[in-house]
Image 1 (cartoon, one colour):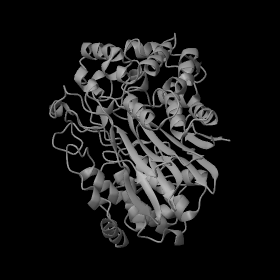
Image 2: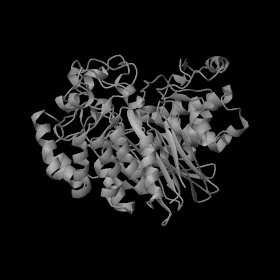
Image 3: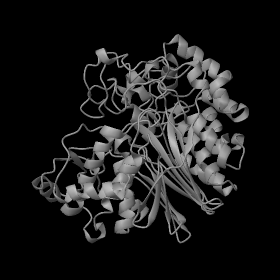
Image 4: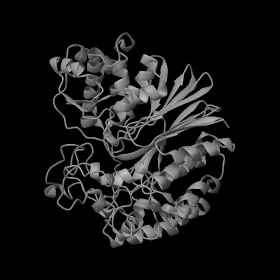
Length: 535
């Protein structure tokens, strides 16, 4: 089957294309590619992670959203650490504890959803057996491969103020140390051999026994025994009771295009608000990157940051006024504030975490956009299993009573925005990004770049970009100094990056089918990225 696969990992893209060419549909290709992402990029995603998928079925003409969110473990209390907080990082806005308990180790883990989410996608939409789709990932785990540069770079990035050093994180358990460190005790580097036979056996078990084995079968028994021995908050009951949420995605009309993105607590509510605000302005009449355009985009991002601070949470625990926030009336009100040069008060900025994305389309019109992640990875590997676990607790709030505070069973708010767009009622674009809290700003700008400025996918994802969650507005170095100076003269606080392609900004992965021709763009802001087209 013809189609397109776009993702940060070349091996995953190649695997997805091979599935399409073997007759699988977009959902088959996404599942195969997604598991290959977990194998070849273990610091970004894995079986112990979480995420969400936005799906469009060509045969039914229906959208669907599968949220496989992480959930706080039953043994955690809202006030359990409130007296121990020592402050917050200036960027990322992580709560600081002297022992890094929320960023590293077993107590940072939330109940994971990745296995259940991909299983739900397979059960509802795939055509090929799971054992066939996991074959390439099993082989890569067993036979091994040289560490790619983009993987090695994750483990050797300098630690941010207040954050654990990568060496500390990936040496936090004996199993992790054995997997990610060489004989000399250092983290493996580019070109070092890497094999993971334990993960191969885990994948073989999931392919043959099924996903529920992870949550309430033999594999669950191994996980629970290790969790109980290490004082984890996630319990046997949390695993057994886990289910993904299947619902309709959030949808808005943007200049006649139907845009469907992640349901709450995902970032669709943020990204779609940005588009709603931008729709109030005649962007095509502006020069891209001009002071007028940059102020409009930066201010829209800033005002949507207010939503994140006040309303972005798990709707099962606290009401989220979605209809109001996504109404055109609300967008018009914010647009009027922007025209009056009225910006929100200063708010803390949270920069991105460790995540990955996958955009897939096939020739029949099926589309799937999946963002999945470990947050920043806890460093935990349960002995004998071979896979990494999330540290979802790290980006939740230890102060009770706030939108993203600890509550058992509560899903973590996230900016992930897996998105599918229809043009004239037909599937046209699949897009999304890894990049923590900068995802919604990146995806909205990339979409606008294509619709409003006629850019190709690669031009759209690589164009100079802004990011804000209130104040300040962050601008890449490629945005001219005179534009930055003009923005400042208009009352906007701007931080001008030292990077042409700022690695702190999200990495957009875009696929388009335009008049029967597939086109793709993988963001150049990170070392990885690939586009594969099945012929």
